[in-house]
Image (cartoon, rainbow, N blue to C red; front, side):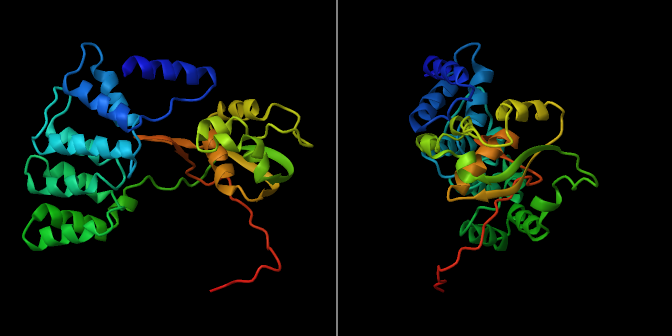
Length: 283
């Protein structure tokens, strides 16, 4: 598995893109390696587990969460992770398959503090919210701490304060930028592969843009400031999701523990949605 994934990394690097996240089978193979790690691969195995497996309800996330849950309950062992660290990594998975084992960890004094910290900054709990309430009403002080943290919105108030001044480098594209400029239809086949598809952004010639656009964006990023995409009109067209993904990829910041999906903290690209006549609204 490691040899095949390293070959994949090299092949993707030749295309100027990062490797794809691990799928369910690769994650299952990774779990077996972590249980009995080959000498010299320990740090790399943990990096793959924490940084290269999708979060949420992906099939690979199911495998990852199940393994970490088993460690947190003492049902599985590895020399690379203890119960507390397993709960901490579960807390990085946003929501989905990680929620049930995090709530269960509130009952174990060894893992409860880590579970409180993780759940306090997790919003995608849905109906599992009532499970935390039930534990609190039954006298679980750790569940009570989670509810109080949610009530005080500590997931939000703990974030860095917005800077008084934000300096950005402007990437100016004259005229109208259609979503087909940012997500060309002839490259639609690659849209699910965000980094690969983003390489096609602004590939088609257009008036007022004579430089190599992606090279220019990299040059602006090297100045150390966030890059703002600026145009007279930006975002007309139908492929807004893929177009935004491309801009995010080139101008966004990495999200810790979440492979493949960058974000933009200051929203320098906002799609323009024009008024469309003759289409009635049906409530």
